[in-house]
Length: 111
Length: 116
Image 1 (cartoon, rainbow over the protein chains, first blue to last red):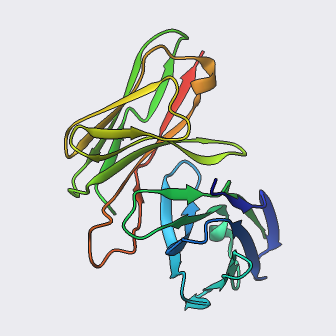
Image 2: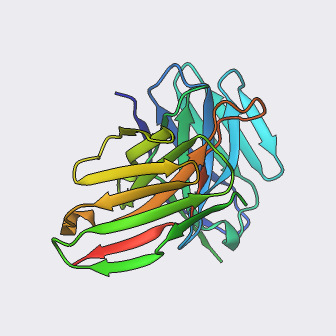
């Protein structure tokens, strides 16, 4: 079945760039997402990319998509302590109910 | 923020007791979902609804039932709670039919359930 995989932990120093990686198996995915979960809260959409795009940039965030390898990454430039959270990769297909979430990557930013 | 509330936000109960969690939305979204979040497993879908009285099972539905009698409310019931159901439960909504939508899911704040 469909699967989305992420590494569980990432630790970076404040001011450095963070790169969080994700691989997925569903070739029919239309949208790929990055959600952020802060402690004690629900998930909030951080950014998304259409499956026909290679890259999307939004301020400090850069999303790269390699469709051939089914690899998605999220780069956070100038990482701040407020970026410490769990980041979930997810994918869905247009017009369907179904979303597949990764296990989440816990990002810890060291001052 | 999307108008999604969950109640209760925290609950401690004993093994064998019934428990009902409530999700309420004010967005008139068609789809509603219940997930559980456990360390190392990410989010796993329990049940979802695609309309009033229309529900279906997700990947971890055993031991759970749901009901949706109104667009805005989606109830999750644990008929006889077990310690393995200790988890954080999230409700989410979406509406794939919206033309401007990129199929985003909006999440509630979560309910932390402990079964002793």
